[in-house]
Image 1 (cartoon, helix red, strand yellow):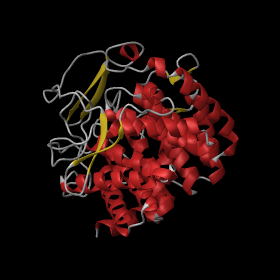
Image 2 (cartoon, rainbow, N blue to C red):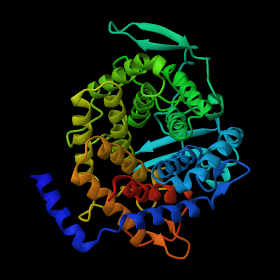
Image 3 (cartoon, one colour):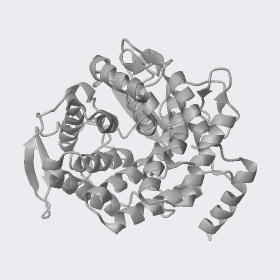
Amino acid sequence: MQYLQLYCVLALLNVLHPVHAQSNYTSYAESALQTLQGWYNSTSGLWDTAGWWNGANCMTVIADLAAVDNDVLATATSVFASTYTLAPPQNPSNNLYKVSRPGFIRTYYEAPPFNTTINNRRDVDSREEAVPELPSSVSSIGDDGDLEVLRPRATLGGNAAGFLDSCYDDNSWWALGWIAAYDLTQNQDYLDTAIGIFGNLTGSWPTTCANGGIYWCATSTYINAIANELFLSVAAHLANRDAANKDYYISWAEKEWSWFQSVQMINSAGTINDGLGSDCVGNRNQGVILSALVELNRASPNTSYLSAANSIAQAAITNLTDSAMVLHDVCEPDCAPDATQFKGIFIRGLVALQEASPMDLYKEVIGANADAVWEQDRDTGNNSLSVDWAGPFVGWVNSSTHSSAMEALVGAVAVGS
């Protein structure tokens, strides 16, 4: 019944918010790219006003646009090359920590350049405790539950070391960004960097929960959904690109997905909680799993993967959108510096699912959000995009709010909304 109600609402959307021509979405996305690049720092290789992991998402949305708009491919290729070389010296390394409470997720930086542009207030979560140093080898949990050494953890390909900090979700965002760059350029250095990052991630397995999963950070005992969804996504993406080691990555992805379901990260509403012991629900957790399961199904076809992805996507649409199908996070408008990125992450995953398992619902949601972003969440003076997509335009904007909202415009181009 709830999905029938959704479709009834969708039938009204073309009356309330007329769908824009496809060429218009492309034009909007190209304008958004031009605005985004106004924040690009050609010295640091990153986007000013946003954090380290947000930079990976800024790069990924550019890759997403270039994948559907050949006119921006040269810009994207130039950005990849610059960021690959210039960003590593800006890596916050161990000078960051993360806090997650209901309605509050934030990265704090304690070293330049991010401590002055983002936030340097120390506010350590009570759950953040030191954990033993991780082993120097990559391990996998075999079918019998025993540890099995697969390859040295110290073997890092490409420039992986330059994109590793102490938090595993950050590292995974960069891995996915470099995979997106590889898809466009076929530059092996980019893929090798992602491979090296994943090799490092596997050294963090397992946690103390059900002998599986990974922690949020090397210095954290919090077991959250996003780090584990990203682990799954990187493994599944690599399974479809590193042919010589396909089975290795499939094994990791399947193991992660099996563990993820067993510890009940997915709640009774069908959405994904922030982590174990948390009932906070955000857009990023719903989006990453969609593209992860799409890639896993591509690598190792199993109807249950797309079925699960569809269930999560539809539950997220039911629970996280308003009556016009526009996405919201509970923190709006005060979502800086992390949650400003979340809605774009969901759209990216929904686009991937729409391409693999098309539904009118997904296409309409993507289009509704793209329309809202452009019509209601834009500074018409400079085409910058803010945090509340339903509007009205919030008086502050940065490269994180903008790149997130830009993902909706790119998504509309990709699915032909």
